[in-house]
Length: 156
Image (cartoon, rainbow, N blue to C red; front, side):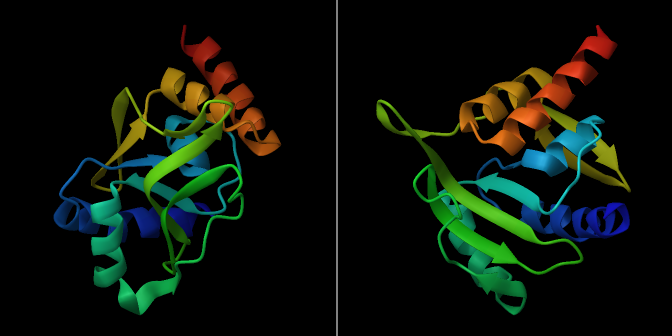
C-alpha cells in the first residue's frame, strides 16, 4: 500500500491545495502512517469543510466512487465522498461525531506538516491524532491511538 499511498498523495495534495477554499487535513490511518506509526493504511481520509467537499465532488467527478453515507452513520455524519486514485480517498466535509450530548463537529486543533515526495501534507500533531482517535471510540481507532502513543513515547 505504500507505493499507491505515495502516488495518491502526490496527485491529490496539489489538487486539494488548489480547490479547497478552507483548511483541510489528512486524518486516520494515513495520518498515523505519515507521523511514523506502524499501521495498515486502507485509504486516505481528508477532513474538509462542507463547501470544499462539494467542490471536490464536482472537480473529481471522473474518479467519484460514491457519495453514500459513512459506514458508521450512527457515529459519524458528513458531506461524504469516496474517490478512486491509486489509493481510495475519502473526503468528509464538516465531519460530526455522535456524543452523549448530541452531534459535535470534529475539529483538529493542532496541525503539523509532513513532507513526502515533494508535497506538504497537513496532519494532526501526535497528541491531536491520539485525542481524535480516542474520541472516535472504534476498536481500530483505539489501536491506532496506542501505536501513536508508543511513537510519542519514543520521541519524548
